[in-house]
Image (cartoon, rainbow, N blue to C red; front, side):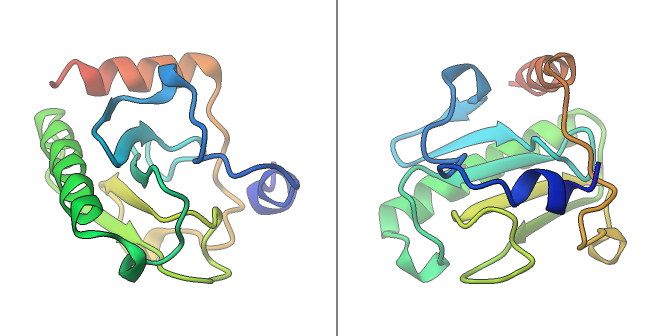
Length: 142
């Protein structure tokens, strides 16, 4: 499947604005931690602002604090799973390389940014079984 052409270009509501409760691994007042549906790595996590915004500079101080809290929780979780190399990636603003126009932080273990296929042609969508396993694996570290 060509991820970019087949999945992301389908018109639909923002996938981050109304997440399913079962997809949320952890949350606080203004942000939530979840898995990546089309991951660069099996334990690729996302921290997402609950408010629909696109740019970091639009975050309130409270949102910055809450997002950092969840990024730290995600990093700690991934370290407990045995990973040492972790990238945190945020794509800010209107950028054609961003697949969802909603501010989110990618926490990606064992991936050099130069290794990422920015065309997204190699990314596969997770099956329900893979989603359940990812959530179980991450929650086991809390």
